[in-house]
Amino acid sequence: MDIRKRLTLQFLLIGGLILIASSWAIYISSERFRKAEFRSRLANKAVITARLLFEAEQIEPEKVRKIEKDNLLNLNNEKIIIYNFRDDIVYNTDENSELKIDYSVIEKIRQGNNMVFRQGRFEVVGMLFLAKLDRFVVFAAATDDEGMMHLEKLKIILIIVCLITLIIFFIAGWVYSGSVLKPIMSVIKRVDEITVTSLNLRVPEGNRKDEIGKLALTFNRMLDRLEKSFSMQKDFIANASHELSTPLTKINGQIEVLLMKERTTGEYRKALESILDDLRTLISLSNRLLMIARTSAEDTSSFSRKLRIDEILFQTRDDILKLKNNYHIKLNIDSNFTDFNHLTVMGDEQLLKIAFSNIIDNACKYSSDHSVIITLNPDADRVKMIFEDNGIGIPEEDLPRIFEPFFRGANARSFPGSGVGLLLVSQIIRNHNGTIEIISEKDKGTRVIISLPISSQKF
Image (tube, rainbow, N blue to C red; front, top):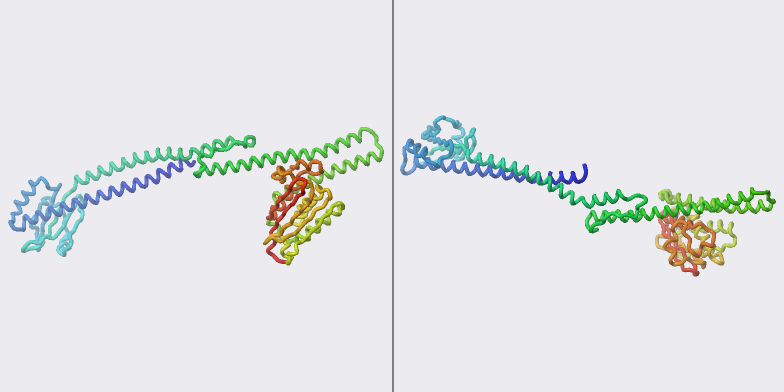
């Protein structure tokens, strides 16, 4: 069942329950009023008849009966029965003996309890009347045909009103729910139009203040992220394809040239060395792409090993210097480190080495003196690492894009590289719940600041 039908039925159900409850209350109140008013008239009739018979100027029962018979204000099927203290009937207009009075009821009335009850179609009132020389029990009964007729008409009217009102409720609920859901239907229609090729479309946001407007606004923000993500993915695929095809094309071209004619051993060796360089570039790029994919889906809950950041940095420095002995890497540890536990983090040693080696290699590669200074500082419950170089720096307009895949600054394109290193670094640091900040100015060097949370577990 769709929302519109459900809202309409809920509207109808709530309105119907209120209407039925109100109609029932009106009917019950009317019935109680009719009953109380009619029984009051019966009691008055009983008192008047008893006074005519037994007070000041007493009238003979036959005369009273004749008076009552000719009275235009008599009640329908009126019956009056009066008993004396010996339970003898001294006055009776029930000629057909339709009323059956039980003597237990007479006794209760003599004890001072007025009785009101229904017997068949008759409403009956029983009461005690005190005369000068006797006590009489008076019963007055009649049928309230007119009152019952009015009550029946009221019931029919209420039923008709309920049915008509329920129909009105249904129509109103259908129209109201349609108007309420119209913005949502507009959103649904627009969402159906959005595909991979039309992510630039956005849903109408209305006034942005109600829940539907906020939903549309949130959905548009999600579309912004998706569009950006798809755009980055598209660029990533295009750049990755280009970066992978370039060395493959070079390898293919060199092999084809070698096969065109016989070469000397030296020529073969030179060509193979060039092919080997291209293969190394290709392998390095492939490994970095695989590492980016791995870190994107890394489960940080698996980082359960305690690591010493200073030891990882020393190991990374030694590994780099074995391959590139022209690099100068200086590591400074702040004297405020009085507890080695403040240098301990939870993480993956291999991933952290990859991140640090990328930063160190970039710093040395883009510096004329191939040097970098690494400083370790304590920072509350974190450990902070600062990598400083005096290289070519990063232009201000390129800083917002340095973590995009395959992006390289205009002043860095003459240096070897693929443009995925910093993306890999940022993902590794983020997976370790750390932060990375890059401060740079063109031709004045770069500072990379990494902060990692220290482990709560002590060695």
